[in-house]
Image 1 (cartoon, rainbow, N blue to C red):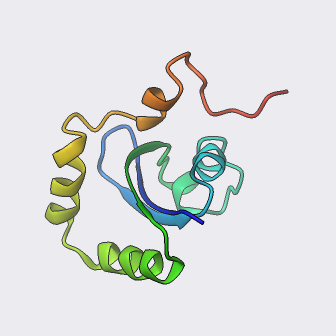
Image 2: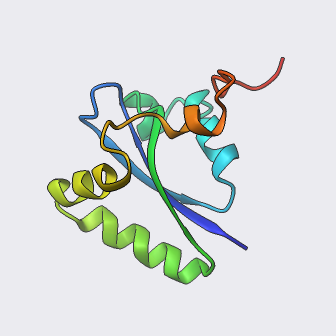
Length: 105
């Protein structure tokens, strides 16, 4: 099973959330739809996914998530900017037709 470590941010890229999941599309959609009003991403309006990496081992993914959470902000920024220099929402690359991430009604 594949596990994903990902970064969510707000429109101004001032706040970063680092998470880990085994279903990236579902989890990002939950963030975008503010499924949990008490969560960090809702409170800080972090709805853009700007970085992700994969791991085939859950223990490695958990270790990597913890490692990244302990990094200095400059290091996290550099990691994002290596592959995503404009901090664009990667969701738009995955769903170019304009899917906002909202669940079908």
